[in-house]
Length: 293
DNA sequence: TCCCAGGAATTCC
DNA sequence: GGAATTCATGGG
Image (tube, rainbow, N blue to C red):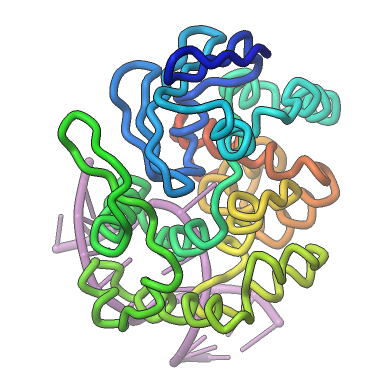
């Protein structure tokens, strides 16, 4: 991998195991728009970023080397060795071969804790396009304008201070429905310090989950998503309808409880559970895997 | 009209 | 203690 700063843009050359479209569209992230094939605009980390991929080269437009080193290298997980991860998973289990081969370019983004917490509380029992819409509305109304592209304005994800001021009624105006009180409770607990990034970072998995589960509306699945996407805990294994379906199809050949799948994933995939989960999730959803009967 | 969505809380038995 | 129902909202 070679990094070059040319005028105002940053060029990353010869990057392996990365596909921009797959990484953004695999379901881990909601604040992006496709501009062209292999070209996207992303809102993350209080910044607006236009990115383009041409084969194994990636261009981050209007980005300095220091922003890359301070923000984007970590965000895109570029200093992680996915060749090693995929080899480990495939050696462990060739049942993952189709998913990993098909979704070879997914990287797990290192996203902001509070944004992921709020987003995945909203996500429950919703389809991805609608989640995107609500998070964009939320940002437009309560975030800060961080830039324009093609005449369109973009807004950062709101801070906990600004969302903490909202009432249940104000959340309902964003069409979050029954999740409104959950969002109020999440903000309250982040502000009063009972559920924070810093606190959870010091805990083992079991205790970290317990802390997240204190929030109303955060159950096992959302807690695992927060751990995986918002706290970079790559051994987490969120089990939603798609994961349940594909695990039943690949491993069990019959209807199986989430508890049983959770225990199996922990034993079987260990510290790489999160990667396995994301390859499987994206593959299952993209191929419209159906319930096992 | 009915069914489902990157679920979780509540109620029922 | 596990299974069924309820919770808003939008889309197919």
